[in-house]
Image 1: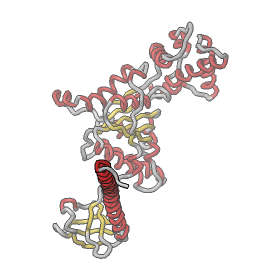
Image 2: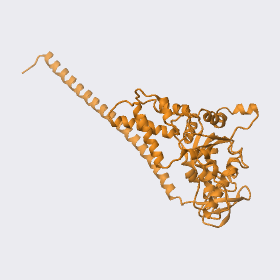
Image 3: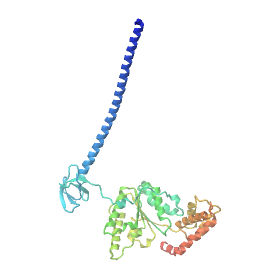
Image 4: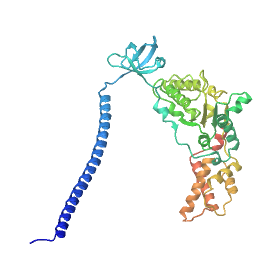
Length: 407
């Protein structure tokens, strides 16, 4: 059977087109496969680079772990640029060489160094030792109490601003007048009058670092430990300057020196002498201000009260009627009051200090909650004053006798 020529030509052409299509399809598949392989190769290369980096890090860490530990020592004397006398932590003294990586200028008596175990050569100079207890006394987060939150102490706030805040914020004023700014202030008065509150406000108002110390924390059991802690506290303050050191209950460490021969009293006296030297000794204290607080100024050592150590001694006395009114306004600012005469409350709260007035406001609120009310009325304050006054009488808290001591 024969086909027309045109028909045969079409068949041949279709075969050629089909063959060409298959070839193009195969080429496209191969190109797609090559592209996938190239992308995969890039991913593998990146992973390989990452693995190499991690491998290098692990090798370095492994090398560090294989390095033998170094011996700690203290420089006793510098002989020349390349030799020094060192007291090792194991006991004996050695004349050792300096590594080429150590700067001879850093080799000074008292410096802490690392020694090679085999040659005892100095391979590293360590930073100055710091007492972790002193570092823990620094307050990182400032209190949220400002001078506006303190009532009835306007004159005392002015005095403490002049002594502490003004020299830190505007030192040029003292330079123009030609006087040395005051160094410290002692706050004294009955408990609850706002001494610690003033120190918190100073920490809030200034941009200075703030180190808080309780006097009893400086009294230690072993000889020299308390004095060392005092040195470290002032060293930390100088490094963080401008800085304010607040010593609460300073009478625990600064009471009058006596002829007592007990070991505990002698150690307290050593700590006191170190405190006196740091406050106004041979070395300059720099931009470091001191605030101290006590309930017993009558038992403080006279040496710590002289100008140069505490340039201003401020009495934080019991508030008068106007002062009590200011304190009540501060504490009742966010309270829901109804028909309450705060002036009358201030009159009824005679012989009460700031802490007592805060307790009165809290108790008045508790009376309202107890009766399921959303507001506080005058009777709540009267009952609260009676309750707080009754507690004070029950505890034999004789405030008039205390005022004799501070008057």
